Image (cartoon, rainbow, N blue to C red; front, side, top):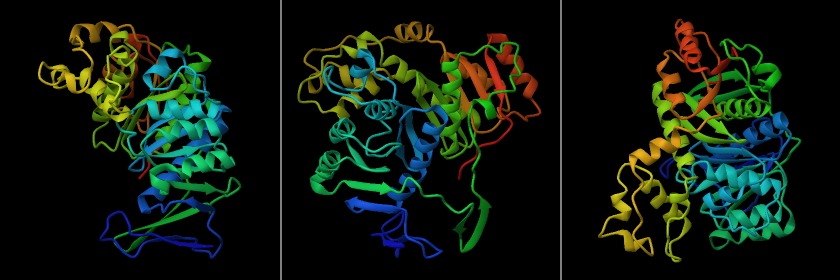
Length: 393
């Protein structure tokens, strides 16, 4: 089959809508359950590229959580600690495969943004991963295949309407791609840039050139994630996963601040005071995530105030003060950061430092490169110029 009709395009008024192979060949995707829409397929076909490249670059199963054609989170299949299980609402005794760990991390990077996500997996979806997805609010999934029991579990979501898509792992797209805007056709070569430590992390321009192998891995995760993030974009990573993605901002400092705040929120979720919030048993995971986000934000009274706390908690929690948050975040270190284009000013480095960033990769090429390098040197931050921009539109 070389064509699949869709209900509508980006919006209900945009009809007709379809995906098809212009050369008449068969589509490389098969819908196994549900009826994915136009935006679903945009998310699916971008996210599957991201996880495929992550696995190729890092040698571990990978997963991504996509929303509105940008990753909310991306991660490798590294084991979860007890604290991370608690952060991501996963029972201590729940079986987790490496692939399930990858999705738990990708979803856990920014659970607020991942609500109703599209999922991509680098490997055949196994039962532990399906059971994890079963209890999350999600629109659909794409993977190179599904174990029979895993497919049965996923097909039962959303009253049997959950979108499940398989993609041929051997599919290779045409090296030239096209898109239309306002009736005009654009053509360009596909971005087949190989992103790994050998191609991206050789030109260290700062006084500090010492980074661990884990940091190199995290810098590569950031760059591959940025390759599939709507530009301008900045990505913070730690421990084999993204922890803050700032996408689609007109100003790079706004990307850095947005992603940095997400990274800070991820860090604050590790705090015992947050982990021990006394939620009522009948409060669902999405509502818990919303409450946590408010609790660690600037208006905690919205969930722990005298007149509202009983809607969410069994007892009134103590507030998390600005001083407590500042003290906790002041000890965060080892975070990595990538940018899809050069930093034009040192203010980006100043903001990144406050989120514990100690290693950076960016293309370089600004007339103010030396100012940015000097700011890194001021704080002992290691920075590499990869020399190549990674815009995605």
